[in-house]
Length: 159
Image 1 (cartoon, rainbow, N blue to C red):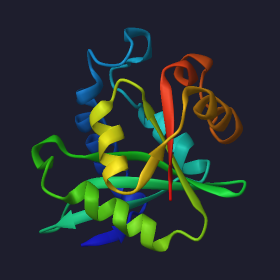
Image 2 (cartoon, rainbow, N blue to C red):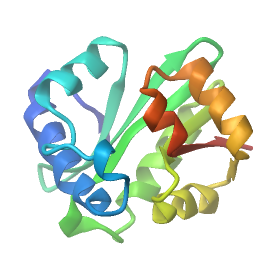
Image 3 (cartoon, one colour):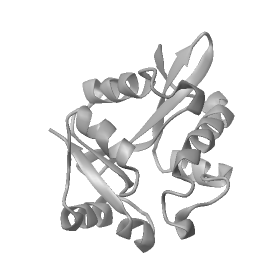
């Protein structure tokens, strides 16, 4: 079941993000890796900035989350993570399809250039990878991230 996450889900979202983000360890540049990958304070700032999480729940347990954030004329997909033990079980696909079905504006998603599995996932769901130059322009326009993260990220957009 997919549902909107609430403030009661905060610790579970935090745990899922940091569990699933272990896939980035040793893949993204070392100067971009943090442990934990996302602090509680950063997660709180993201929610306060308008990131709304949808969660995939099974047997009363939240197993995956995907955030969305309206920025200017687009909706950004933010912080899409599935608990490591449940990778490959269709949770990510269900969440992205849920957000796509709800979308009333263009969807953009940014990810690390080195996260080739994430890029392939979004491409399988109809997203188009932008060139490095296009990605940089989109990241500068819609995201509030460091210059270093912009250098090492790409953007994909839906149809």
